[in-house]
Length: 285
Image 1: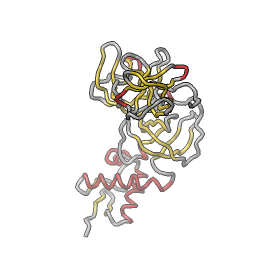
Image 2 (image 1 turned 90 degrees about the vertical axis):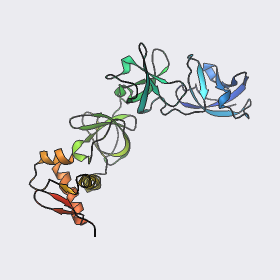
Image 3 (image 1 turned 120 degrees about the vertical axis):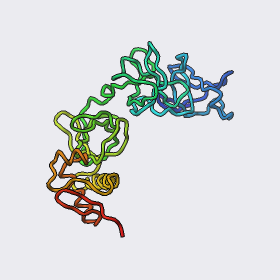
Image 4 (image 1 turned 45 degrees about the vertical axis):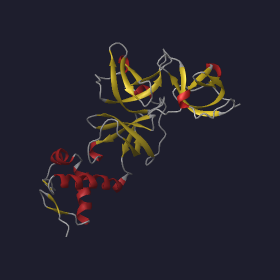
């Protein structure tokens, strides 16, 4: 039999089978007692002394239970989940891939949510009740320590909020970072997940981010966005050297510097023709 620490609620656990029951098998939950793995999750070969890989959570009667199914998010994770029900007193219920939906209490909501909406949440164990719950106040779940990333470090990102300067992102499920509008080829959506790179750590402990490595390496991302924009506008954009930065940002959604680098790359590839006031997509022979 394995020696292990206390069962982690809201996480996957490797647990010992300790006996049979009328509704399944019981698993050794240590200080938390025995935990039922219902019969519908059994293969028929389980016996005392075996170990199983299960997700542990509370069922509809608030009893600790195990499942071989995996939720979309575990405790400590962030992501977008769909609202499937609104309870007048408790809050919203979210589909997280398990038989029992995940509660998003009213006090943990930011703005009004409706059935069918997808909302960005973090999953945690509620301090008062001990139950697993969701929160839209994701900053509460992030690390309080200072990020220790070097410029150029690859990180995982979840877009959490649009601001005047760009898009805030949750970095490696721990920290907050910012992707600037000027570095993006197209707008992002809250809940989008992607890889990015650290530019620098600011004095406030937040991270400046990029979707491409520093330097000229960012051109291909904007270049691809400008190319798609040209195709969407029948091969012509009313932008050129004489266009103001405001005009460029309004039409292309990027800074004039990034725009000029991108169309310079397209010109070298002989994909566009340039004038002072227009970019035209060249037809292929």
